[in-house]
Amino acid sequence: MLSAHSFFNLSSWEHSELIRAEDHVWLALKNLKSHLGMQHYPELTPALIQDGEPLRRTLVYYNGTLLEARDFTIEYGDATKGAMKIYHDGELLIGASVIMAGAVLAGNHIKIGKGVLIEPGAFIKSPTIIGDQTEVRHGAYIRGNCLIGRNCVVGHATEVKHSIFLDGAKAGHFAYLGDSILGNQVNLGAGTKLANLRFIKGEIAISTPGDQVKTGLRKLGAILGDYVQTGCNSVTNPGTLLGKKSMVIPNTTVPSGYHVDNSLIR
Image (cartoon, rainbow, N blue to C red; front, side, top):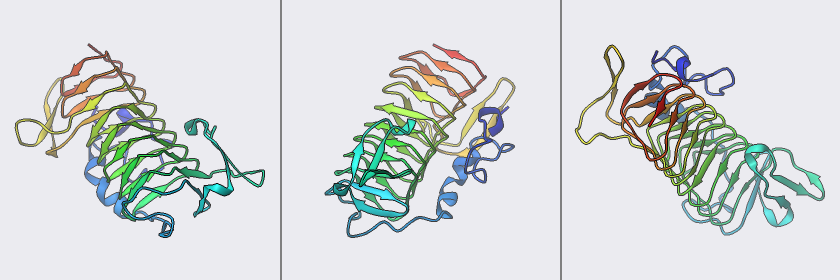
């Protein structure tokens, strides 16, 4: 009931060593920092990216090389749908990514996938992995120890701390995610907050219909199964687990604990 395979389809997940089907679903958060520490990160060109400073010009990242965008033609379509196009001398560069002027990359452990768009004002701390065809939008704040999958959105004024997005997960507008996991194709309504720290200090336990299961974690936000949707301005209490295809009505505060698949929370 609380194992990862109960919440997520992991058949195409690239980081199978991090989220194992038989483990308690929150164990991936315990192992996230060490997992990111074992990854290989490319060396981004120091002459073009100054650590912790806003980019002075838009860059194209292609085949492991950073290049100034002034020599390219860029069509800023929806990156999550593969509609962003980058051309050089009329040739379409498959898999090229764009880091726009004004974005800030802090630290040397940041990996950027293919077809990624990072917009002005985004602040990304190391270590972070950003998967293929993901958008990090204007004003996003990625605080490090974050793993963002493919075709995801980290939206405007969204803050993400020590969290995991599986493929297609979207936090598009004014969201907060602390110590949380979003399953495949999860969508957070504007203003969703996934709170991660209780007022009363101590280990977070997950309430189930028959028992309470200790997590060994002092901080645990929400774990949202595949296809979960939250309405605008909804809030989850620390230690909330939502089963697949559950829905949260706008302006709702979700009680902590385990909620079965297809729950409607109002």
